[in-house]
Image (cartoon, rainbow, N blue to C red; front, side, top):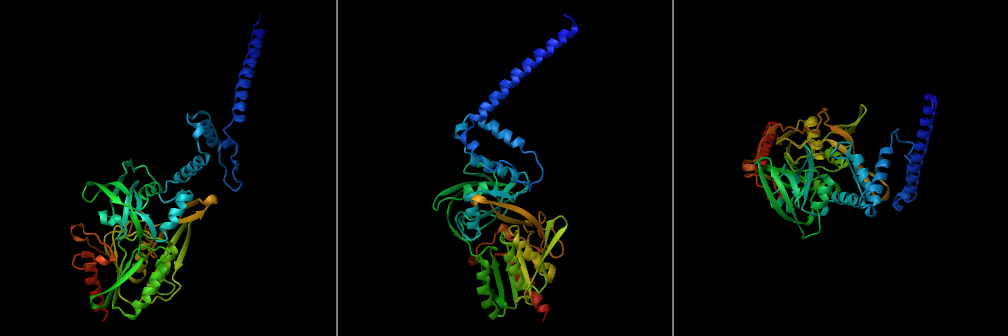
Length: 417
């Protein structure tokens, strides 16, 4: 047998082997596909919409195929849960702590939050440097009564490691039926202390606004949040306040975690001139949207100071920045939280939703709030770490920040005479 024939033989044998094994694996694959678990057969909308940018989805389908083929408990798989998990992963890949995919149950929880009433321990949380951090305990809530403070870091929830949890996951575990308890392991950076707290859940009703007349006819305004009930509460109380003709205003935004953008724009209008810029919204791609006041503010000429602290976040930082940039209103207290991005809740099919960051906001003078916060014009901490409580617990002698704001405001009033 000459060399040429040997090569020819080798080639034929190779072709036979390739055909055999290729046919075997192809047949095995086709046979497996014909016996795919029924949930996979019933997946709809397998092809990407044409409006999406070009991308290779094969790695997703290939991975899911292997999960269905090889996972030890594949008969227990819930395809819809798999899809939700993959969708959450898509949004998680944005590396933005404020963007989340919310399933139907989580969407209802979010909607409930913004109505100002829910069952839980009553605490606003965010992520700071990757750690779930308390923005503020809500007034009259189990969280406040347990001693939780702004800046506390949640390390464990019911003995589960919270460091890898999303905000939604943590919220879901913390919440529960009225009367049940949740255990939190807290690290407090201010004292380097680790605390274990058992907190009983309760129905939490959050006030949006209240006010009180202090000495020398100075009005103390407490804005707890910028959620749905605020507009009506502020509107009804403001006419009563106008009739009292206050000499000055103290706007307390301490431990105010924020709320709706359109509501803070509405509230800011009471304190500003018509056409004043309330904030600049950076939409990306060099697109800036201006939010201007469209009314003539009823309180625009009344001397004002604003109280802020590390729990002052989001919409409350917008109001504080707008008053300082437009009217030179002094901010008193400690540096604010630094949450300066805008989230839009987009409704999806099946009752799901997407909470996604669509913009970052700047103060009228262009100060970026996100990650920076607002530095007070007069920095003062309450003695012995004393925290502000609910509206009813106001104590001017005990609250050094409030005492200082009264002192500054009285000086402004006297100098304006």
